[in-house]
Length: 365
Image (cartoon, rainbow, N blue to C red; front, side, top):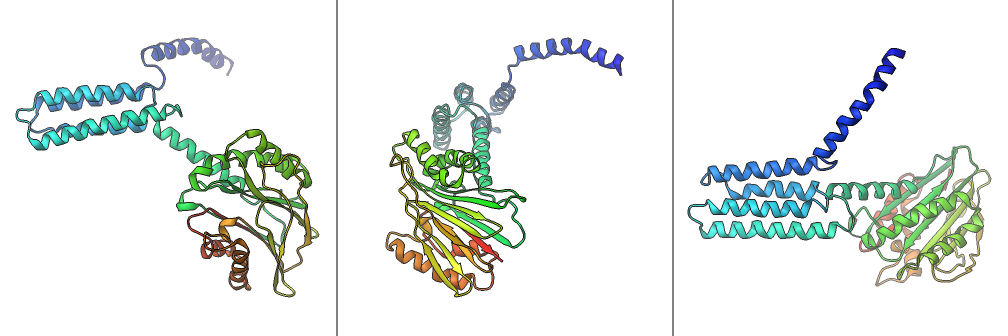
C-alpha cells in the first residue's frame, strides 16, 4: 500500500504536466467547438466534391448544433465560419436555380438569427443547453421549497400550484418549514406581483430568502422581516402578498397572518360551515415598519384550513368576495368525506387560467 501510494504521488506531477499541455493545445470547453468546425469542414468538402449529390442545406446540422452547444464567445465566430463554408459551397454549384436561391437565402437568414441569439445569450454567459439546465434546476429548487415535510399521524397537508399559461414558472409559490419530530408547522403562500414567467424570476429569489427567514425567525417576526427584505430590493414592481400559517401539531392551535392577501378559510367539521379569517396587514414591500395582526384559531379533528392566492377567487369579471364564496361552495362539494387529492380538485375546478393559482389544504383527521 505504501509503495503504491508513493508511486502514485510520483506520477501525479507528470500527469499534471500532460493535462496542462492538453489544455494549451485544446483549451477547456473548446472540444465541442473543434468537433463542430471539423463537421462543418467535412460537410463543405462533400458539397465541393459532389455538388450534384450533397445539398448545401446539410450545413444546417452543424449550425443548429452550435446554437445549442456553444457558448456566447464561441458561437459568433462559428456562425461566421458556417457562412464562409456556405459561400464556398455556392461557388461550385453548376447552375443556381430559383429554388437554390431561396434555400441559400433561408440558410443565411438562419445564420443571422443564430448570431442575434448569441448576442442575447451573452447576458447569461452560458450555452443554450447549459442555460436551460440552470433554469430547470432553479425551477426544481423553488418547487422543493414548497414540499410539505412529513407530519405526525393524524394530519394531512396537500399543495397545488398552476401557473398562467401552463408554464413551470409562476409568480405564486409556497414555502414550508417543519421536521417529523417537531410540534409546529410553518407554511407561507406568496403571490408576487405579475404572473407567469414575468414574475417567475422574482419568485425564485424570494422563495430562497423567505425559506431562510421562515426557518430562522419566530412566527410574529417573519412577515416584518419579509417586508424589510422586499423594501431593500428597490424593485419597480417589487411588491408581494402573503399569508403565513403557524400551526401547533399537538394542540391544533394556529395563527394566521396576512399581508394584503386573501384570507384563510376554516372548515368546522361539527357544523359543516366555513369561516373566513380576516387578518390585517399591508402588502409586502410598500410600507416601512408594517404591522401584521394575527388571527388565532384551533383545528379540531375533522376540521380543515385553506390557504390560497387571488388567482383562485378573483377574475376580471368577479370580485374577490364573490370568488371566495364560490370557492367555499366548491370546497363543500368537492371535499365532502374525501380530503385526499382535494387540493388538486379545487385548483382544477376554480380560478382563471390566465392567472397563477396556488392552494394549500391542511386537514386534521
